[in-house]
Image (cartoon, rainbow, N blue to C red; front, side, top):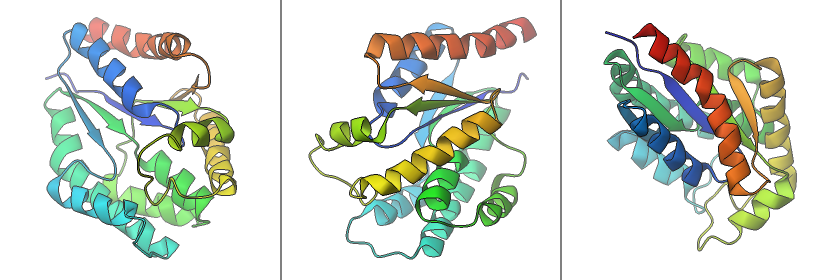
Length: 212
């Protein structure tokens, strides 16, 4: 059986991940590919409970506790949903993965990247996305868009300096992993964003077609 592919979508708040994930799913479905869409933290019953806790503005967490909760959720998500789907030949499109942890808990909270990588190795080993789409926009643009939402979560309430640190790490990761991580200019109008997504997906779709 052909292995499924793993696509993650990353970016700071307000860059349009949700709408573009739907667009990616539609592309894959139109190509005849079985796909599931999931998110982090989340994706399983336990992980969704952890998500509620981590995103609740009333929750008080030190950075290490936040990090461990994120990886607790990821452990169940990878074991119960992501890895089994990929092994069945199903494609997985995930709203955030460990790159988000490096950016938010590492860059934003100041947690050691070395610790994050050690936890990643324990939780998901060599399972990393085949393709990561980094929807990137200036922090001011993302915050303005996020502010239009009815209720802000615990991360969305952070100040601009926090998101500048998060974005800086995302861009560093994209520079360090140019094959896996494709930066998409999310500040441009939606048709331009989706054209860049099309270009990023094309090689992966061709590889899959040629392997069939």
